[in-house]
Image 1 (tube, rainbow, N blue to C red):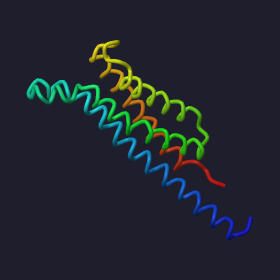
Image 2: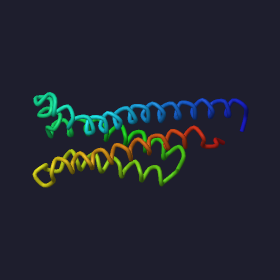
Image 3: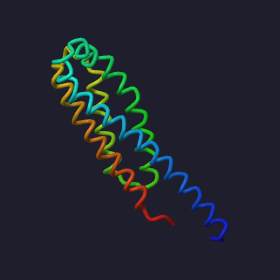
Length: 143
C-alpha cells in the first residue's frame, strides 16, 4: 500500500468514526431524554396535573421513539460495520426494541407504569450500547 493510499484510508476511517460518533452522541441525548421523561413525569403530574396528562400521553412515547429508533439504527449499523462487535449491535437492537414496543403497543394491553418501566430500561440499555459503540469505534485498531 502506497503512502497516498494510507492517507486516503486514514481520512475515510476518520470520516466513518465521526459519523458513528455523531449518531451515538445524538442517540445518547435522546435516550437520556426518554429516561428523564419517564422518571420525572410522575412527579411533574403531582404538581402540575395538566403536565401529567401531556407527559403520559401515548403520542409522547411515539414521538420520542420516532426519533430514537432511526438514530439508534444509524449509530449501531455504522458502528457494527466499523468494529464488527455483534454484542454491541445486539444490545443496541434490544434497547431499540424495548423503546419501540413501549411506544407502539396499545397502552390498554399494559399498564402505563409498565410502559414507563420498559421505556426506562430500554433507555438505559440504549445509553450503555451507545457508549460502548463509541468506545469500540475509537478503540478499534485500524489497518
